[in-house]
Amino acid sequence: MNRKKTANRSFSAGFTLLEVLFAAMLIGLAIVALAVGSGAFTLNNAAGLDISTAEFLIEEMRERTASISFGDDDGDGVNDLYALNNQQYQPPKDIAGVDLPTEFSAFAQTITVQYINPADLTQPSSTGPTDLLRVTVSITKNNQPISSASWIRADLP
Image 1: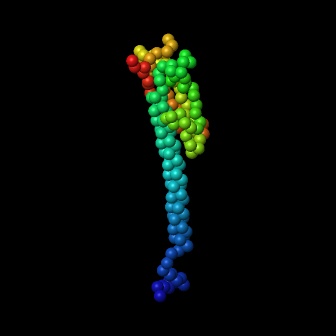
Image 2 (image 1 turned 90 degrees about the vertical axis):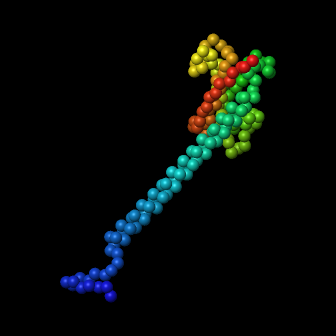
Image 3 (image 1 turned 90 degrees about the horizontal axis):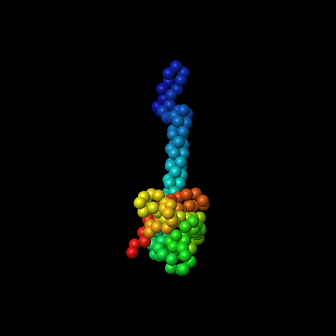
């Protein structure tokens, strides 16, 4: 055996209770760190999915507005593209203006259309309709903003 006797004390090979408790604590900390890391990864993955979906919905509206006439094709006296101003779609719409499936029902598309000043493209027009429009699409999920994008449409002859 591996025992030594020294002054009425015997020592044996193995771990002390303190060493076992310390090892258990380290293993527990490692498990907690893995669980926290996994939770953070899951949250970031969900946020990434929401951003990807929002960009998809913005592109759907960009393609839809590209096919809408800059003029007044329906005879109501309003520029057909400008008629989209302050429209909100929930569920969102695709390129053809059809509601997207229920998987997208938590998302909403909000469209803002402004005539802009041809001399300063950063400013809205103060003199009325111009040949330039800024279209802004904002995407929300459960009323929380996710993404937004703007582009300029011109009425080219």
